[in-house]
Image (cartoon, rainbow, N blue to C red; front, side, top):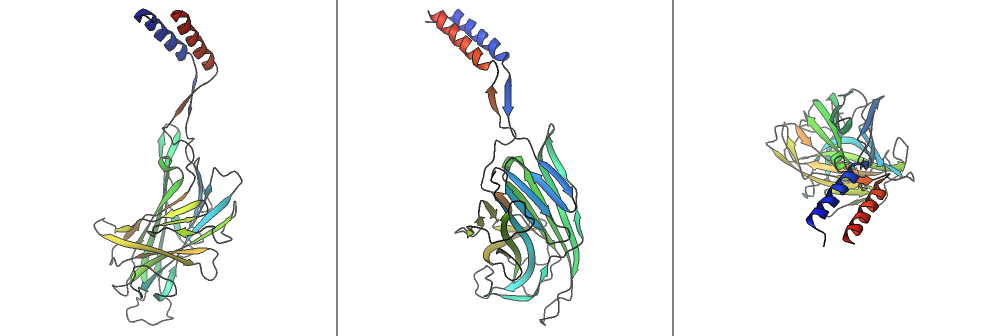
Length: 317
């Protein structure tokens, strides 16, 4: 058996040898980001993202950074807001069944203000990036249908707040906030319409319907290709005291759009400000997040282990 004294000699020898061995910490390289010409670009080790909300409707454009084919890009556009009657009383907006009141508010083509970046860092590595696009607009519904309760105008403020961090490096959170909606009826649904499309990598717009589009049985998660959109069951008013039910549905994108439509329908929330936070992401999980390190022996590491093993064998002999 190895004596206590011999065991101590082995321990000190091993510690000395390992101290002389270089280690490499394999970890995420952080988030890279930039803003130019109204377009924000961000990348992590798992996802690439472009967000634009200048001179067009807000557009989320993302792809799997681990797909070296290169593969598909996924496009999600925030396109319309409108009030609707839940004709079949099932809590969701069914296009072609439920009656829409008046013309929709189509997100305007100008006056989106970019907030600049707020970042979080560990040392020199950017671990999280946050930014906003804000639009303030007076919406005057076109008089194509005369309704008794139709407002003549609404002073709307819409804010889109984007968050991406290395804790979940394969996804991005985006919150949207709506203030100033003038309801026509208290038993209506307020519907936010998104258009989802797909393209070859590098295209600025979607060119086709997304492949394998599906909505899960609970109705709060959509998958398309290698990407997904996940929706919270509830929104909240600005002060957080009022929980607002949301139910989702989907349908064809309609005229002038390529892709599918996702309809997020919210119950009545009065004149308060609505805050809601869906998630977009890719199914790939990426690499180790920042803070999870793998220590690797390099250079003389293998030789050091062999020397220690030989020392143990010799002392046992």
